[in-house]
Structures are given as structure tokens and as C-alpha cells.
Image (cartoon, rainbow over all chains, first blue to last red; front, side, top):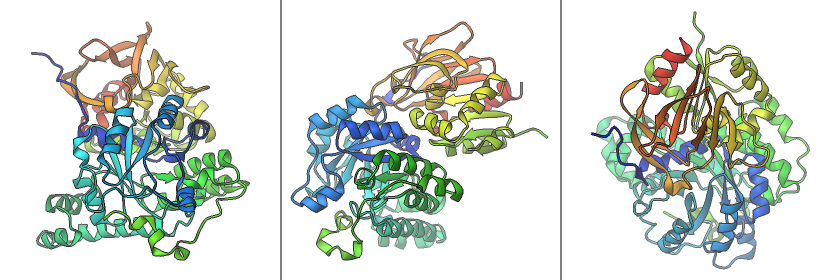
Length: 299
Length: 194
């Protein structure tokens, strides 16, 4: 009888496990090899390969889709850290293509134009793990039910305005605390109200936390923004347009990495916030007409 | 009064390591500053991104103190990225990537490929009865073992995934995410308290 078991790939444990390894880190949007190398060199824990950062998607409009496989291949080739890429909500063929390219994580993302306004991708069918956006606990639990191995609160991508990211992480954390305070017999109705499976709702009420890692995304533009999200309980941060739409991407990328680690040390935060040049210009979310709010995509 | 074990918390799955020690009833503290390094009896280097952990250690003036402490006999335990940080030599690193060193081995980063090749498996571990449950996540491999290091874990095909050298332990996989606490227990009993 061998002491070895048969190795198993694509298990929930290894899918969720990669997200565990990214904790306390910064995942940066990059659109080419040069940016990917800057991100890796700055200490990013992973990069998100995409053709247009959210700020440009917002400015240019039109339908936004999965990136060109050539571009993703080049970035996979160029860096040694994990590479993520985005598929449209519900577009399981884009996800199949990304899996075949060997990306390390797929982001089923509201930043791209949704392909299905009813269903998300059945993520259990894939060996590659998925990260999905959420604006509240019910949405996060529905994504986990569909197989998401990591959650990111949505914020409002491409704005440089952190207020929506703040709203979403506060909402999710607050709902988890409220659930943990409920008695057993109240959880059935709680599950109905959250529109999530009772078993998962029960697990969260018992443990007081999500069963997967949760990063924050959407509007993080400064070291202080990143530290703010970490102090509110984020496991890490995604920075999209905030780095490469700023005046000095190299300095800003490094500063945000440092701030994410030393998020509760104001002296370090002051030091890393110095002399970073222009932040991305940004858009106030309150000035965005409702149809242009990406966070409202997905349900 | 014995000193607690430290877990380096610059980046990665340090919380899981702290929880493993908590389950074992072993006192463990987070280490992110030089002053904290002086107050521990051993140091865990967690899983995470070795490039990130190395850079943060350098930026925040922990790099040389940790290297020196290891050289001076501080017991250390590295998992995955932590193993990379302990290797005297690495392959497939990024340009200029540095390690603390301490293990007389060559370690190859991302040796199994991308995330699709990540896996979990039970394997025997020298000094622990019955197989341990191991998760390999974009894991490194020990491709060459020098005379000072001793192999404690291998895959079924013989590839080396764990070594001990004096009071230094490095493994390719993550017992901390599988709830496999016996390796933490082994580190504490056999290497820290020895």
C-alpha cells in the first residue's frame, strides 16, 4: 500500500489556496509587457492582463471584451508572478479560452460588457479558479455558490473615487457581522433575504467570515486609499487605472505595495505618500449617470 | 519564560500559520519589524509571492537582520515562498531576486507550471508517522540538495519537496492551508525546542 495518494488538481482547496497566498498584496492592472514588469518589480503579487484599463473603457465606451490571447501570452511569458485575465459575465467560452492559455485566475468582471444578463459562469466546471465582484453579502455568496474561489468588492472601476469601494466593503462586512449575531432559527429567513443557500449562510454565521479571500477593487488610487481598505478588513487590493494613469507609475506602484503591508502605521504611510506626482485625475462617482456605473452590472 | 515563535507577516498566508500554532497551543506572534525579530525563538516564512516578500524585507530593513539571525542559529521554517527565501540558490527567479539563504539547496520557482498544475496530495514525511496532507500551489521544487541538507519529503516520483538542515526546515507545500498541523508541531518540538 503506497503512502502516496493520487494528486488532485482543480480542487476547491487549491483554487482558494492561491488567493490565500496573495493576501496582503496588491494586484495591478497592466496592458502590456512593460507595465507588467514594472508591476512585478514594484512587488505586485499578481497582474491583471487586459487591453484597456477601466478608465479607458469608460472614456472610449463601446463593448468591452476579453483581451487578445497574444497580449495575454506575452504577459504570462514576461513575468513570474500569477497572471489573471478578465472574461465577460456569463461568457463561459471566453473563460474556456483563458483557461486554455494557462492564466492563473479568471476575473468574471463587470468592467467588461456582460454577455449574459441572467446567468453568471458555472465556475465549478473549470480547473482554473475565478474571482468575482460583489457589492453586498448576498451577491458574494451567490458567486461563491457558483464556484468563485475569491471575491473582490466592486467599488466603481476607473474612477479613482474610493467611495464606492468603501460602501461595498462596509456593506459586506456589516452584513457578515449582522449574520453572526443572529440566532440559529433566524438564519432560514436570513438566507431567503440574502438570496443565498442556507448551508453557506449558516457557515458564515458560525465562522463570522467568508470562506474565501476578499480583496477590494474599484477606485483605489493612492497609498492611503489602499491602507484604508486594509484597515477596513480587506485581504488585499486590486489597483486598476490608479497606477498607470498616474504621473509616476513606478513610484506609485511601489508606494501602494508598501502601504498595503504597513496599512496601520501612519508614519510609514506618510513617508510612502511623499512625492508621488499626479494621481489619476478621476471622476466623482456621484457625477456618473446611472447607466455608466459598472458596479451595477452583475446581481 | 520561553520566547514565542514568530511568523513573518510582510505578505502571504501568515494568518494560517498563526492559527496553526494557536491550534497547537504554541505561543506565536506576528513579525514585521526588526524589534519583533529579536523577541522570537524561531521564525516562520509563510507562503506568498517570494518576489514581493523579498522586496518588502529589503525596503523595511528586515532583510539583513533575518539573514544574520538565520546564520546565527535562529530556527526557521519556510513553506513554498518561504522555502524559496531560505534557498542558497534559486532558478527561474526575477532579475536580481535575493534570498535570505540558509538551506544548502537549489530551488526552482513555479516548478510545476501555472495554477492549473496546482494540486493536493498525501505524502510521507520523515519523522512524522502516517502521510501528511499537502497542498502544492504554484509550488517550487528542490532540484538539487547539497551535503548539508537532508531530504525529509519527496513526491512519489522522487522529486524533493522538503529538507532539513540543522534547525532549518523548508518545504514546497502548504500544510497551513490543509489543516495539517503536525509539521508545525515537528518544527517546534524538534527544531525550536531541541
